[in-house]
Image 1 (spheres, rainbow, N blue to C red):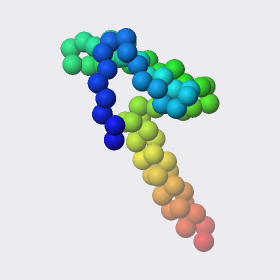
Image 2 (image 1 turned 180 degrees about the vertical axis):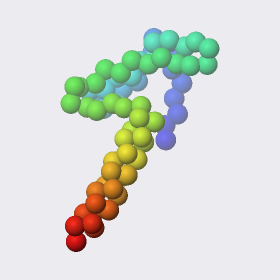
Image 3 (image 1 turned 60 degrees about the horizontal axis):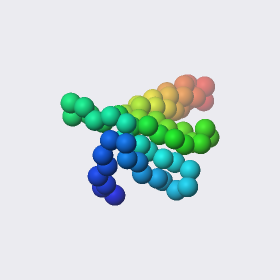
Image 4 (image 1 turned 90 degrees about the horizontal axis):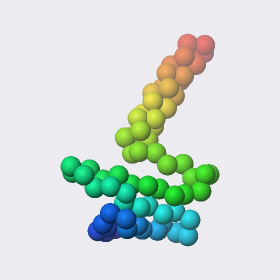
Length: 70
């Protein structure tokens, strides 16, 4: 894991096509701007984890339903 310090207005690059810029620092939170190609999917981690869990639950339910037809 890379840990880096940035100030307001500074940014970092991921590869050639993704830039993350610190826009605002206030009351213990940081607002960032992400400039990336449209084909890149950008999700907050908690949203990603929730979607992953819901998909897993849906697959389990589908398996249970399919067992009823056997």
